[in-house]
Amino acid sequence: MLFYFTATGNSLYAAKQLDDELISIPQELNKTNRHYKADKIGIVCPLYEFEVPGVVKKFIEESEFDTDYFYLIITYGKHHGSVAARTQEFLKQLGKEADYINTLIMVDNALIVFDMEKQKRTESEKRIDEHLKQIKADIDSKKHYIQEATEEETAFRDGYVKSIEENGPAYTFPLYKVEETCSGCGTCTKVCPMGCITIEDGKVTYDYTNCVNCMACIQACPSKAIQFATIQEPNPNERYRNSNISLKEIIEANQQKLF
Ligand SMILES: Cc1cc2nc3c(=O)[nH]c(=O)nc-3n(C[C@H](O)[C@H](O)[C@H](O)COP(=O)(O)O)c2cc1C
Image 1 (cartoon, protein in one colour):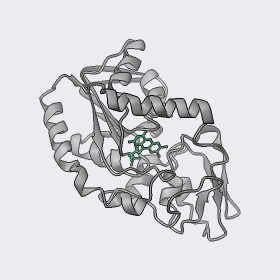
Image 2 (cartoon, rainbow, N blue to C red):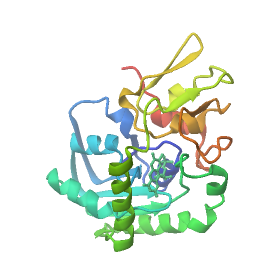
Image 3 (cartoon, rainbow, N blue to C red):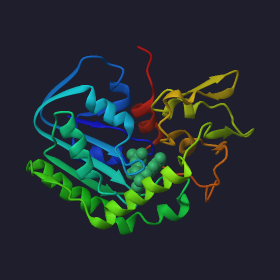
């Protein structure tokens, strides 16, 4: 049993290599009394600002996992910031503990920092499938391992936290503007895992109350009509989705169904 959160498909791709029973965290959050029982239970998610995304932490906090082996795989693009060790501390504070936490370097989808065209070219050098194979072998054999914190990675994270304290948050709302090239196709409403976007009379409207900055909407817009409202991004003409994952799969993972 493997729970996942994804905006652009990296974490979903990793999850698909690790288990057959995949459950979308944002969809699962609609359920109350979440108690899960399985031989192995895992979570795969991206790294956001050197942390497990708040929505994933909320899911962990509010769920009960009855299992022999609990593991987390955190996908990231450049610096993991020693997230594994911090995540184990977070779990311990909840009275939970992971048997295995590892990170997996993939294409970095952080649009505000990187040019997606250049990022896509880093894919082969990151040896993703090789690392995934190793992680799968570890999990299959129920290996006990928490990736250790390193001085260098911890320093990256600490430097970032300090800069946020001094300069304010990297993301401010309203985060996006929608250009006239919007065709009203509704893709953004379907890929948003938090149900923040609606279309009324062909016009896209954001409610940022639950937005987690995952950027699924801006990445998936087929006409690149969604742009940052104030942030100057390196390349507004290039967007990213994992090359092994279809738009349909992102929609199936994230679309909020009305129960
Ligand atoms: C808001 C945001 C913050 C991110 N922060 C980090 C980070 O701190 N370190 C890092 O290496 N990658 C960071 N990334 C990159 C993603 O963690 C990485 O590309 C991940 O594999 C995306 O997974 P997904 O395709 O399943 O959404 C960030 C991406 C976003 C959108």
